[in-house]
Length: 306
Length: 182
Image (cartoon, rainbow over all chains, first blue to last red; front, top):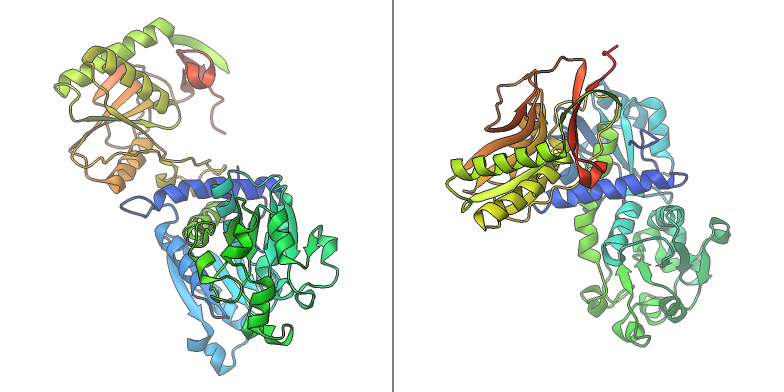
């Protein structure tokens, strides 16, 4: 069994079997992460470049750890310390890196479509680590893995994505991935943050958070991204918290099992109260651990493909 | 499956496993420090059967685990098909134990090499001993089994298929013809 595409650019259009294969394979690597020696020789001799044109802590460290635990050689590239500052174009940078014989490129960029463009100018396997407002497929995969780990299944589950849907690549990857795995997906947030026409992706819209809590099994709560001018779409963070923040009181009112995800970094007291962020419902740190396993699975499946 | 001969039948398999269990206990002077590790997929069930035998003979219950060596293989670059991986399930500490590594067929020795690397990543066993149901020859690495159910000299165009009730619905060892490599 192998994946049907040699790149991972997004979860849109990825067949269910491929997602299933990645999630199953991740279980193997989850076990590796529990060992005293958390390293296997599988990708020995492969060279992977992490091309990060946008800041990232979690994703970059997670990818780098995943690569190291598979024994691949890794090179990190970030724009602040590179010749991009001297005016080199993206294409030239990539061409030069490729001339050094690399097998895979993990890319994050502020513009949507950059990973797709990379597949045309490079022979390496391309993995999208977040492109603009488009997709962040490994985040979608690790969210699905974490939900499955907690609830045992994805099919038929009701999952609501809460927050700034319009400026979230995590939301899109979640919608595509979860829908092909048979989950019922909805979004919730202030109408200024819900993109026009999102119903066409097959998701339901909630504008009342209490209703969303009552009617869903899982909430994937997004960060309010101040760096993406979230402030222009909500009157204040305090008001957002008042109407859309997840608090213990809100959850306990319904007296039901619910799983809370958050892709991090958390704005405590905005989208989640501290009580919820550290409470029994959340799986936030499991998501981080699972992220390494899921990325190992993706790297393994793409890196050993013929 | 183009069967050439049935080498071991159900009763024969049972007797062979009984003898292997006795040999393992004899060489290790009982089962006190033993752990059994089966290699996916057939070795897993053979190890389970040997564990049962040891239970009957020695009235003891050695730890038992399953090892998946896919991540340690050396043929990722040359194989046409991507191998399917499954999970290693060893919940006990292998440090200072006497590990009996169990597989169905010993052939090139490359899987055993991978298994040895995998085991070393789990700890530092006192000894690792190899137990196989069938040794068919054609080794490519300096590896030999400590306990052998049956030595079956084969040609390169033959294959030894071990069938186990748990996965294949019947017990037995068969010699089959495979089309020669193109």
